[in-house]
Amino acid sequence: MIELTDVHKSFGENEVLKGITASVQKGEVVCIVGPSGSGKSTILRCINGLESYDRGEISVEGLKVDRDAPSIVQVRTQVSMVFQRFNLFPHRTVLENVVEGPLYVKKEPRAAAFERGRALLAQVGLAEKANEHPPQLSGGQQQRVAIARALAMQPKAILFDEPTSALDPELVGDVLGVMRKLADDGMTMVVVTHEMGFARDVADRVLFIDGGVIVEQGPAKSVLNQPQHARTQDFLRRVLHPL
Amino acid sequence: MKGFWHDAAEFFPILMSGVVLTIVVTIGSLLLSTVLGLVWAMMRVSGIRVLSLLSASLINVIRGIPIIVLLFYLYFVMPDLGVTLSALQAAILGLGIAYSAYQAENFRAGIEAIDKGQIEAAQSIGMGWWLTMRRVVLPQAVRIVLPPYGNVMIMMLKDSSQASTITVAELALQGKLIASSTFKNTNVFTMVALMYLTMSIPLILLVRHFEKRAGKK
Image (tube, rainbow over all chains, first blue to last red; front, top):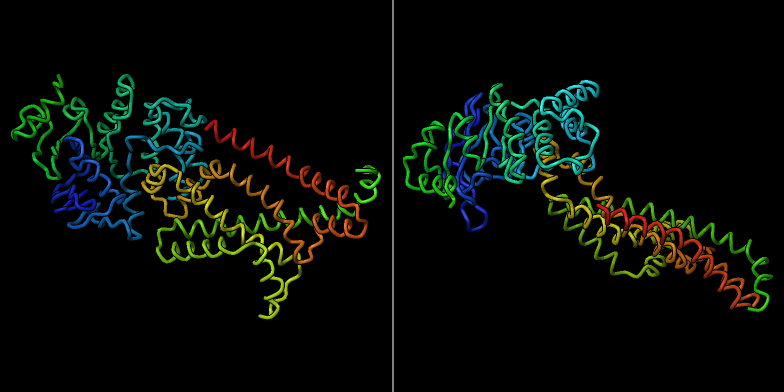
């Protein structure tokens, strides 16, 4: 459902994506791993149209991703995004954050949007926080609200950009638990992560990216347990055994 | 200051009629400057080069012309171009346009202070530019903008006295007329100053309140 064909992207002189070709099938969980600055987040941002790309093509359900075209709204309502730093709207309550898209973008009836919003908050274990504001919540709780907000758009896929990187270690489990449940329910997910345990257990496929190219890809257990490429081996050694 | 209280009682009703006009000019030009300032600021952050340049040019032109010249232009020059404005209309329009430049810069600073992640989050759920502004950016920018906005209110209240130069009989002009006909300069202008101060103090307290609220965030 998501296709990337020879995608190139530069920031000034710095080419961060050097011909990325990949696809994500419906119901698949794909984890993108790699060192900082390798272009992982840029791939997600290009899929969602938050960044433009210079060459190649990205399509979602056959619809070309072009951030300057009106169709980008359609792409974004099909592919939601969860950010590293949550990016919840601090001036709105938790429930209002969740229903903002359905109410104002999808123009859903108010009562139905709020009812589903409450159900989604219950799904991520935060029903009792509906009327609080994001700054009153812990990082883990905020990220679960962000996931509920993404789900509220009833997307066909969700992009996760390092969803646990900004969290205290003891809060990571709750967020990963919610994500694991989503994967079990068949949600299509593309996850940029450093959580190798999550990638190994939940992902169908892993893409290892370095220097703007896909160095290695394949079934999660195969790439993470028996990496073939020296750069993948080196990266995993440094991540799994930092000392 | 001899006979101050006696003079105060005598001149108070006349000066109060000036106060009413001062308030009308201040509120009228505040509303106009807010609307225009918001339009200039929106053009500036629209990302559309032509609009952004047009807004930047307008702001610079407005900032470069003294308020008093703008008032003279509207009141004395516009009739030559076929547009006749009353003194009050010219005052509200002139002060409103003059202050719209400062309001625009204030609003722009407030909008640009909002974390980019907020805009990206809004875009990621399919919001367009205007919806992002209306639902996400502007409600948050208001908190940042309010303290300087309060300061603009105080400056406008005081600068409304410039309307006296085009015959608007607001507080300063009423004071001047009384003083010139009674020669009681000290008593009259002390009263005028105290009346401006009385109107400014609630605004000063309001600004302090805004600053405290913004500080808490």
